[in-house]
Image (cartoon, rainbow, N blue to C red; front, side):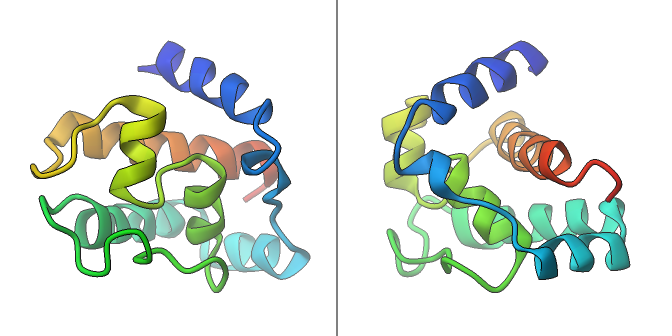
Length: 120
């Protein structure tokens, strides 16, 4: 999975849209204050509730553009909606994500966060 994440991050860096997402100072402070394990738990909760279902509520708009570091990371990593999951990772719409896919999305989001806030 680590190779797949590295390949994805390299491709995402080349996207003008995806590469514009950054963590603000308040996001870094939040990460440091909560701790990386709590942020990982938040990522798992968000992905499971908002992205993993076969037909997510508000598909295409379920991930806010701000308000939590995980949301920023989801947009940066194209894991914000099922349309982006299809476009970037060929994960089909219309079926629930399996455990591997959930783990991949969470690991990708967390790698993006840790790379930008290494002392989180």
